[in-house]
Length: 369
Image 1 (cartoon, rainbow, N blue to C red):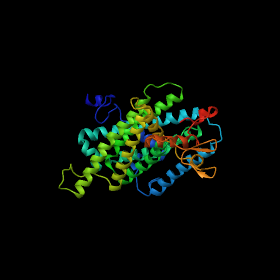
Image 2 (cartoon, rainbow, N blue to C red):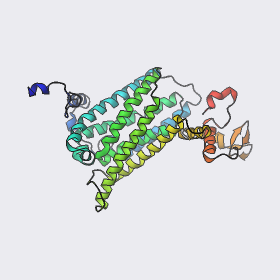
Image 3 (cartoon, rainbow, N blue to C red):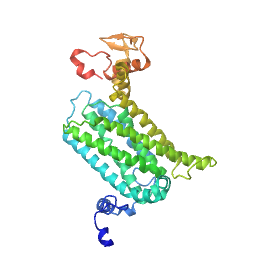
Image 4 (cartoon, helix red, strand yellow):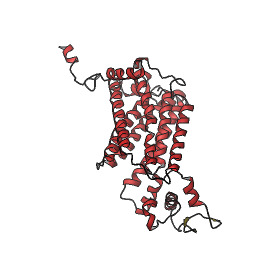
């Protein structure tokens, strides 16, 4: 009877989804890699994309491509790319979902039997060989996600600081956690995969022309994700540093990981939280004053610097350097009495519109923020 029940697709601690998913994944891995997942070993400086040099070069090339691509597209018509964009968002939704369920299958038995602290602070809990395989695959997907920005400049959409910083920094963040062997890594990764399933599915449906009512919840989920991330990461970092350097202070015990990885995790995730909260209030908050909200919106969604636009907006006019907007070849100083947020917002607007704070009727569709 017990043997019969074991073959039924009933969810258990060891089989959260009713069946064992890892053997299926292992067969797919073996077919592609030529060896089983049990033989994979992440070796810093030997495994592909496991050096700081390789990661840095890839990120620098990413920024060079998006800056160069935007320049090449300046005087060209935008590409539509609807089919490719649909495919891109669909496979990222699928990859995120597959990795998420594999993480859940590995983590549920560990958390249930060993507890949360064991799972986030011990290598036997949060740094097992199957989890390292998933950590590495998740890290590689961060480079695949950089194509998001390629679609933006090919379609001549704005390249905002938030978007471009987030993509580049996330690849670096995943690299530091892999090299630092941080057992708490599964917390931000699984939360991020959950958000990405929702986010890329939203992009996929929007590209199909379907109106999605829960767009705002994508940003809310991202903010919730970062708050939970930071709670776990700050706890794990505190536990590590206090148990290592100040053992007399209250602490929960030892926590696995390297110091540079702890600092990278706290710094990058904290910056994400600040940027996404600013974006949320600038985009969705209705209660704030209109002028301040518009100014905050300009800053939170500020485009990446465009050398030609900056030169046009802040260059010399009629032999004199201007500090305001340029209109019809003459300089127009910024109005006095504006607060710092409003003044900076107008400067960003001037840069974004190619040097003019005020839109001419014939080009209003191009220079609106």
